[in-house]
Image (cartoon, rainbow, N blue to C red; front, top):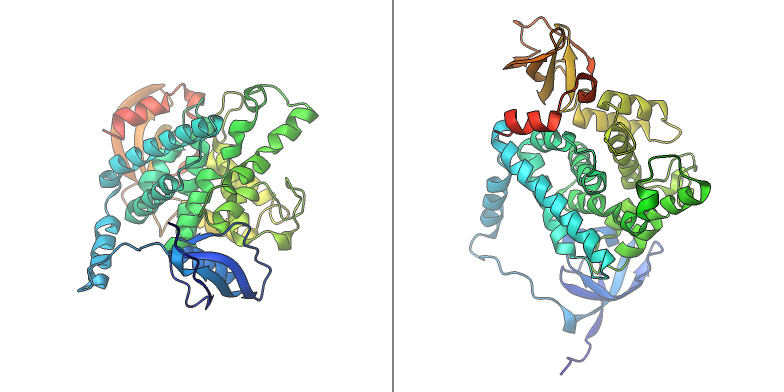
Length: 403
């Protein structure tokens, strides 16, 4: 027998995770509760407060029971859990876990696409758990996940792009010093931002030539499809949905699907547009060669402030570095190497894993070179693409970096 409703008006300060929200009773903004549901997390409550909600109608008969915590020392328990998962480790120590997280995230994307095609509901908790895994890894050592995300498979763009964008968004949000709840919402939204592409015909999605006007219009509709899918996921944060809905909007109003003006695009929307564009430019696809990270950053800077927020772009560059970890670079001694670690005090002189001689066109004994060392008289001439030297970077990476 269903319990009778126990409706009560509560202030936003009284709203607790697990309470069932029926309607907004009083607010300073224009929030609409399209569907009744549970405020499952503190992050959702914070978002309502941020949007100006003052009072809500809740049904106390539907309140979810929250997990019990040891009352003797809740703060200590939380602190211990945080220290276990967030203790800083070396690049080498984190790399294996980062690779596992990445492969699991790709598997989750593949399953989500299959679920949508089969008409099944998406499992929000799985995406949130994936985002939490990224956050933990980034806080332990962000270079590991950043490095993994740079090693791309040419025919796996649909699976890898959203995973990479989520990783970059997590690193970006960490640089912005956002709290963890907000970072998780942003990372979750980034994981789901292109989910609507599975509804775009393959003939358009993977067409090697130029799209017709009709095909291009259909391709652009993937943003609308994504939002329609995400609007149906109970408990998904409005911030996560916003990230997916506006990632192709631009500050000059020339973006899509709605041509929003600068004042209509949130800081989170501005962030995702930078991250999404950066990853798209650097990606290898079946119909397009990727460009170097430096080239992508130059394009983003050139299109600022018209399309992209220059202040946020500066923070993004600071977050990932001038030469992001995982970048293939050519040194002044005619040798190639992969950037393994950034030098915060000297961004132009990272730690490099050297493995190839350009002059003699052959692999050489691997060596680790810290360009910031006083004993090293080398400079980076520039980032390069492995295809230019006939290098199978994925094979090399798996053999020499992950092992």
